[in-house]
Amino acid sequence: MVNHDKIRQAAKLIIEAIGEDVNREGLIETPDRIARMYDEIFSGIGEDAEKYLSKQFTIESDNLVLEKDISFYSMCEHHFLPFYGKAHIAYIPNGKVTGLSKLARTVEVYSKKPQLQERLTEEIADAIMKYLNAKGVMVIIEAEHMCMAMRGIKKQGSITVTTTCRGDFLNDNNLKNEVFSLIKL
Image (cartoon, rainbow, N blue to C red; front, side, top):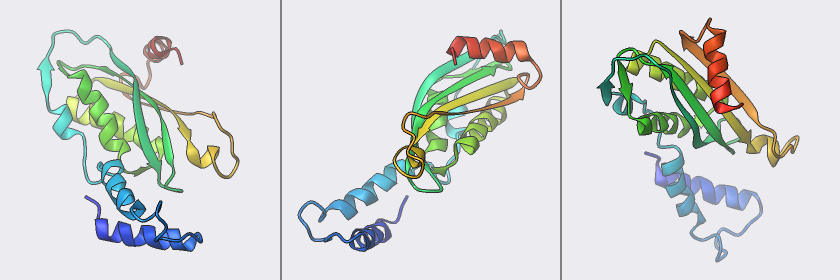
């Protein structure tokens, strides 16, 4: 939970610092809007995916499970600008699976804090391994970063792709290629 009073004070200072009038009609409620928005977009701070991934179901097979195109939004910790895109999670169960919505919630919890795409990829994979005791996991994230698109180099449409593998995926190129072909990356 963010400190609304501090966020409102900081927002007012920023509005004044850029040369705007904090009392202008269109800006009067902006500090409060920013505080409420920060509550939502940083709701993952101090959280992890255990509460989501603890809901499990026993299965007999260990066939590949792939949830692809999980949309997400996060905030770059370097510029506090959004990056957004799609996450793909593939895992090999070890007698247990979780509900598909729980994989999407796992992406959400780790994306809802100041973040690096590389770390986000790792945190999701580590959570699947730890809480599902999976035999292996592969996480791929494709994202556009506003810190590249709207400032600095200004390269709209460039996509950053990060991948990480754990367990059975580490040395099995056939397994990796199966995932890539299924998501058509």
